[in-house]
Image (tube, rainbow, N blue to C red; front, side, top):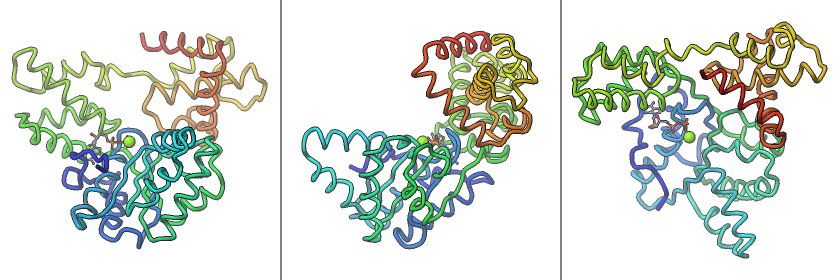
Length: 340
Ligand code: ADP
Ligand code: MG
């Protein structure tokens, strides 16, 4: 009862340039838990295999040592369990549950941001496990020091072990992932078609898998074999191919500038007045949400700003979307216009 997805094993994980380091570190940790890299911190964008790799460590450890106690949770589950334990006065059970394991896997730790009490509790969980030589593995969409309002003592502990990133797979790796997936699903797909899909869908592995499912569904619907032209039609229909995605940062800047009656130069510039700062942050936020460009790439298109500036802007707007109705409406309107 470790809550592991049976599919997320090392066997089904394809390695390539973007994940080689993370894969090697994960394997090493599975073989010698609590010894080499403790904690192991895996970070990177969505759909790149962080959860898969983290759970693979769990599977492998149980395979080597069947009695091993492995616990996998998302950081939200940890936070909820903790809050419930306070409400129901079962904090001892909570501690027993989390501190009495050989391997603790905490997924998407960025959601600890700003949760003071949970961070406090996790600090003690972490210390207890670490002191006893138990392995801790965490994932996040960013580095520990980039998580807003994460206590300094946690940031420093997260750096005790090893931090490795996962980046988007290159074309060869994407083809290999598709081929593996097609074989697992017993799908007959010609090589040129696999290459075509891999070329068109270059964002992340989750989208790649989604593309394959849609191509398959479309071919069934059309009662046709999966060929390159069927794949092309399917990807266009689902707006997955590059040709149809086509939303550029320039286009987003254009729309936002018009909406707020400011100039593109102001969006790219350094002026600190509120009437310009907010539209600038919104344009960065939308670039992050609606394109697959990285933080540094977005920074470049906004007059060569640092990726931390972009990140701060995105966080700021994400906050305002919740707390400020005007911003929320503006974002929704802009998104609608940009998508059509
Ligand atoms: P993340 O946690 O980084 O958002 P996931 O681990 O959920 O990403 O991966 C998304 C999907 O892509 C999962 O179905 C996973 O099995 C698959 N996947 C990701 N990376 C690989 C890989 N290198 N080889 C095979 N499948 C992968
Ligand atoms: Mg994940």
